[in-house]
Length: 469
Image (cartoon, rainbow, N blue to C red; front, side, top):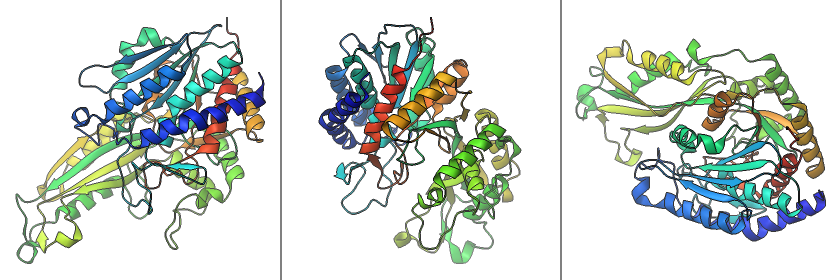
């Protein structure tokens, strides 16, 4: 394979065909179903599906087949089946649903407003990870154009990942014969420690999302007459959260949500810190003199990859300040995002959280807990020698540095599903979400030069897939 030609072809293809498609994609507010319950009637998902299918039909391999699977009441999936010339089965994964808008975008930027600036494409979803289908097609196309002999490749794109992939198990069963048993899984929905090398993700935390509602009255009452006698729903919510989290340290108190970190993952963390150093602290947009929870960078990585955490990500029952009268409110609703370590069973964790929040409630207040689809975390199997070599070779060739390994604090439910279903598969979990990319938050961007080079690395890794017959 001519690697210089590969790099040129991929750069050209990105400039001519992928970036314009991503610009159109950003404009569509295709929020994931958990954030857009009326997604079917809104039609944004159909618009994105149509955009992706039309584009893929123009650029996919002539011998491939594009399949749309759609079950009533469920989000769709796209499958692009590319027959191979040698034994083996490669599954490439991405998703096209998005997180909601989020406040705080800089002037001139917005979630549905694509802006190209300083080699970055700003807007919601391009990096997380709308680029995946386009990059996957590009990588395979570039190899085919050079006559590289490839295994069978199946590109799978879903539309409910940001909701915890609730529809994916259904399609995994429905398409089990088509999917087969992958030898290699390539996922483009993860992050990068920096923009200077190829990164592979070796672990992911799971996620328990829920709404905690505390009711104390059927309607609001003047705070002058009620406060002190009627308990505050917010105070009760605080007490309940303190059963889960030590508010002074952030430590999660439930043993069902904890796990011992394997020694080989601790070594990876030490290697990661040796590469990135203080950049691990600088990557966050700290306000004023705010500091991290620890000055020990190894401990910091451990806390965001192998420790459970609780975040309050939304609320209801709290009026905006300009409309907040002196009223003791009847209820408080908090949306919680609880990250759980790899190897923790999400269902057992969910049950422990439910018990903790609903038993012996202060003042016998009315408490309801509604869970979203739980997702277990994932820890990669040991990487086989050919894949270690292929990732390092690709990274050195296209970035000039050896590949790095990183544990991620986020969740990709599909990986836990595949890890359980296909225990013999190898995994390359990677992505473009490097420092500052800010997926899910304001000013999210795709680092275009990194994405181009990542595409070349993926193509290079696939080209090294061994003869397994």
